[in-house]
Length: 54
Image 1 (cartoon, rainbow, N blue to C red):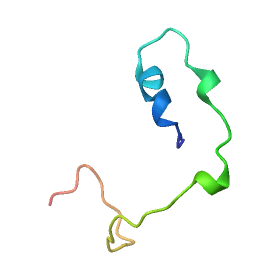
Image 2: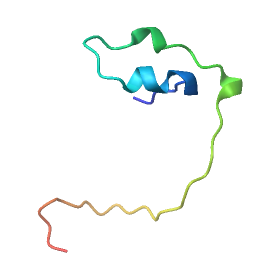
Image 3: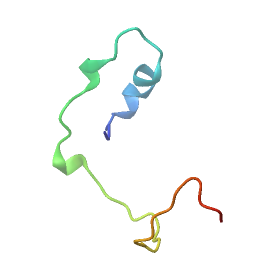
């Protein structure tokens, strides 16, 4: 699942703890979400197995 964090929460979220920091889970306002195109890759219907020879 995708997790959106405020930069101020990174350290606490990534720190090892016995209990997950559920207090950091909040609804992110739609106006704060942005998208960015990263790259294009061709899509294929060919299935690949870990054991297929390449």
